[in-house]
Length: 279
Image 1 (cartoon, rainbow, N blue to C red):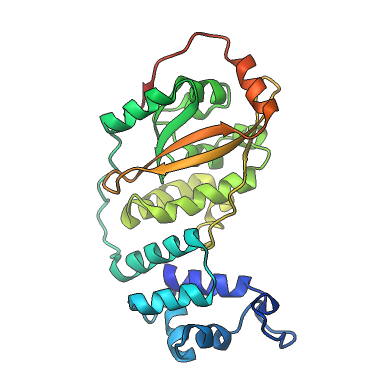
Image 2: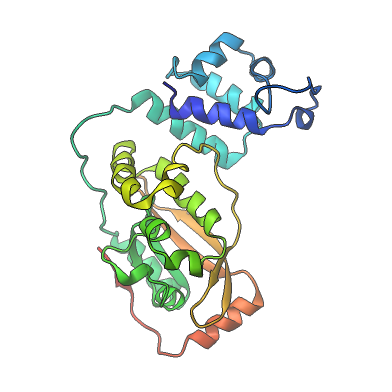
């Protein structure tokens, strides 16, 4: 049986074309990408050891080996961070049979104060499960009519995979679905994410389950929303990680073009609202 770490290394290796590393193309192969021997040589480890990692038979590679693998696969900063996280949960995760404690849904006063300073911008606090924990009136204005805030507690992951309106209002639904499914790898804890996946899978169906074992971080692209009012909104997303004990993020939506900024001004037909907290 594989492990999250082994699955990631194998998936990344399969995604790299040999010529991009200046390596010869050995012709048609059963699997795409780099050979194990190519990666092992670049990392300075044996092919047998790399095979054990990929197959889940070695769950605790040393920090030096992890760094060597990251260098050998030319991982970017985001992928290196994900690799370190997978090493942590692969070596320390335990299956357990009891339902874990739910993630903390309370947003710290300082984070709420930061949201207030961001008004009237569109910003919200979330965790990796997709719970929408607090948001500005600007965020409420942007998502009004999409259906995201119709349920309590609001959850972006559940909305994307179970609410048919998500496909209507998110023209790049596949991209958003990839992002939400991938974020489950990142917490709040391995046990909590596993329970969330198990609970959501029966109602979310194959579009969710087929994404669960994808290991490569999806590309970061602007978020597009086809707003119910007829406006097309394009957003850059700036994400600020809150202290690890919270396992939360502060996400700010920034207009990606002048048309979006103008459309938001047209939508802003009511006075500046108050901060909303779902805690």
